Image 1 (spheres, rainbow, N blue to C red):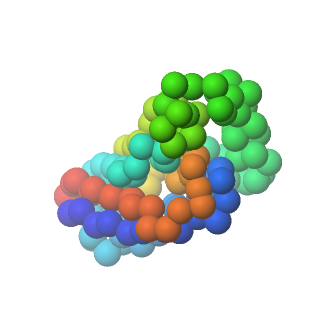
Image 2 (cartoon, helix red, strand yellow; image 1 turned 60 degrees about the vertical axis):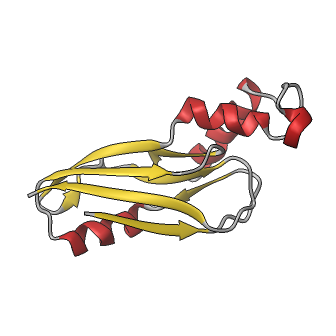
Length: 134
């Protein structure tokens, strides 16, 4: 089963928890055991698994990426000024795959699926959820 949904972002860089949306797709699929792949079809966004308890960890991740990959110093910036977002997205990656057991994502106690906006704000950021299993 495959389903797509879109989200709009409000900030230049932000992390948005999409766990509940993905869980509702799994519930609708009626798959009890298997794998769930969550993929974003954008070169300046990423999907990550991160802590969901303290929102500061999301800010810390963004700060760390900004220190690691500064803006305005890359060749691609001459085209549209967002080379840092492309590099950050490549480091984080466009997808995560999570096991499903008893119809639920097997995330750890403090884990959640997060969409990482790295070049916002944007409308209609597409997320593709593919569920395989029994």
